[in-house]
Image (cartoon, rainbow, N blue to C red; front, side, top):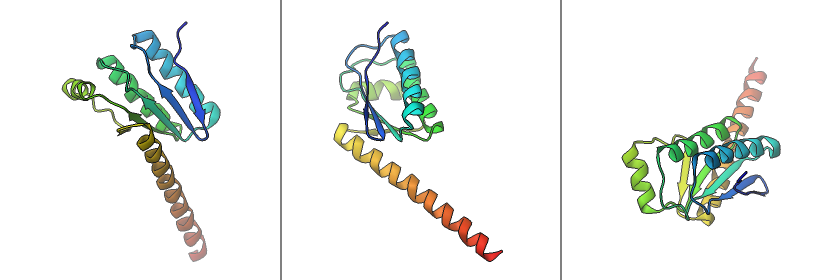
Length: 138
């Protein structure tokens, strides 16, 4: 059974898609990524699609599903290396890709993941401070 390797890099998972995706491979990737996010309590998933020249609605939906499932498990998703033809196709297909952040390359994608994690942690700190303040007022 074909699998796409998923690398763990600290709190993040890195996936580099170097082959043409077919439906079974995409479904395996979706399942494997969600399992790894849960297993390692990952805070971010970076998917490099720079070698992908063609996408279809199924592949677009899989990327959206990965982002949605990862978000539910408290992880952000960043897609990097998107070729212009792929971006045009995704827009023409009308796929919303909700929850998917994009960056030009892996370096910028990792920086974006760090920013997203920092923002999420500051939100939690503010909520914690609000709870503490409310407890003191009562």
